[in-house]
Length: 430
Image (cartoon, rainbow, N blue to C red; front, side):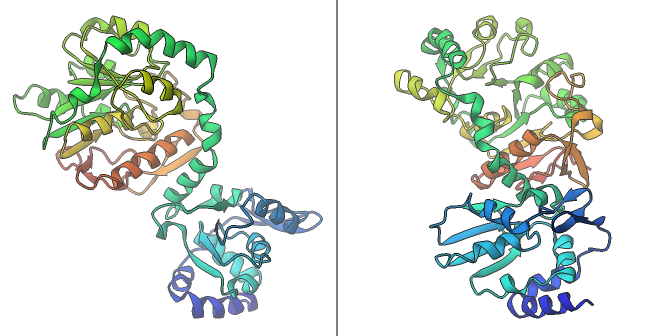
């Protein structure tokens, strides 16, 4: 045991014995570690440089400057080499600094190499594993290197941190003053005025089971069984997202409702030929040509997005929750219809079986599998490829589920992302 580790261990054992016990069990020896030198030095872990190799303190001061200086409490995600913690503690106004470990093995390694006692000993510091808290805490700074290096235990919190960091960037295409958005809303105005309100559907399935069907690759495992269930007299209600509609129809499965919110959805995704008696739930950003061609009833509604602020004042319609994916309003619709139990199909938020979507070719609905650079844990606890926005959608669905404990949520497959708050539907999952 190194001298640095012994010094650090004394503080950890005295202040956070449970955290210290967990750190002792971490596997730091398997990490790919290199010393990187410049004007100073740092570590490179699995090809990711942990901090600046020239001036770690200057980098930490730049990071600290992004946080509100008057805040009495701050959160740091990732432990790094301790530089940011030390800089933040220079502020006498800071009353509490919560440090969240994102990679236990990495922190154990740093403890064996460098003296971390100056910040660990400060009475204002609290230390825990990031995933010990279900939600991210504000205000925070997340060390960029450790957002890449987060381990499996802390991956879900990592995903929520990345989503929060990217929030303003992700919302850039939803500028309420965008000429394209204003034109689309204007084009949809007459349909919106004459259309039905989604509120008419609310409460219509009180206490019932609903299947919410997404387009993840795992949906392909269930076509045959869904067809058999669809033909039963007593069965759950089938709510399909727009991109799952065509694959379902091609397999003889007629959904009871279809939900669409994306301006990019065309007749290719929602062919109208078989749409008789299938209600379509939509929002005003949907393509008016698709809406006009649809043969079933149309129910309009809004999300809480600022792009609908003016319309909400002019034309009263109910709202559905949207968190980036069409699956969110489909789930919210099921809840508002009164579902007591919801089983999710194709809600993979990942690329299991090395595919992007069920019933579509690779790249038809977005980037191909070969472009996937991120991962989530699947229902077996194994890493599965995904893309960054899918991780954000997953986090938003998990938050929604946590906010609706009165509904039982089930997942139909272990192949896709593990969804916190769901159990597996044993009728479909072995």
